[in-house]
Amino acid sequence: MKKLITLIFIIVFLSSPTFAQELSNIKENIMDSTTLKPANMILATNLQKLLHQDEMNFNLVLKKQGSHNQQPITLKRFEPEQTTHLGHQHISFVIDKNSDMLLGFVRLLPKYIRSEQQVSKVVAFEITLNFLKNYAPDLLVNYKNSWIDTHDETIMVADKKITITGIKVKCRDLNTGSYFWTIIAPDQSVMVFERNIEWDFIRAGRQTQKWLHAQWLNKNL
Image 1 (tube, rainbow, N blue to C red):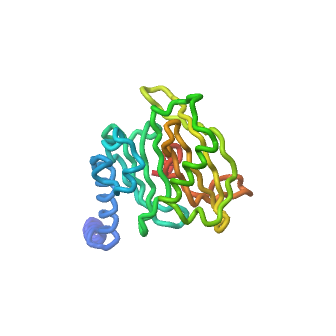
Image 2 (image 1 turned 60 degrees about the vertical axis):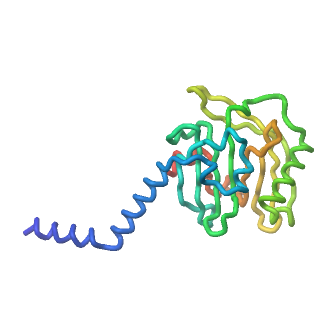
Image 3 (image 1 turned 135 degrees about the vertical axis):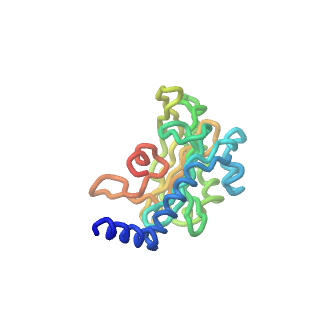
């Protein structure tokens, strides 16, 4: 009798909308995580312009749906290998799922290993303004530049940790109170962009999700 009840329960569950939705989510995550296509076959033309030619062949190794604050987003992570290696070199984009607005991207690459040859603060600010005119003009309406200075990130290359460096331009959107910034690479390209970053000064910490950061992904994927 117990076996019959258990069998009936299983049949009912397998035919339920809940199971169908869970199965769909599992399939989507598997497909998203293993679809190997290069960046130049996936990214919109305007986003491809942010990459160098040798970066166009990086493979899509991770595609994940999530939230940026309360906004639904899609994370697309590209690496030169065929699987995800968190903490290693990568190119990633966070895109608003509803509007296709660029909410953030990084190009953390060993060619930007720490060097004394950096762009000046004036040049970094000019590059940032030109970038924002094309990819986030709304941020230029009412903002304040907080500071400009060198900034380091680390990645693993051949089992060794290396430091890559650029010039960070951090600003605040005075309309919303959120922060945005760029990091400009030594070759004058944009290495990092993040926007709509909410900060809790009481907790002294960032409240917005960190889809572009390996340590956060390790805990939240």
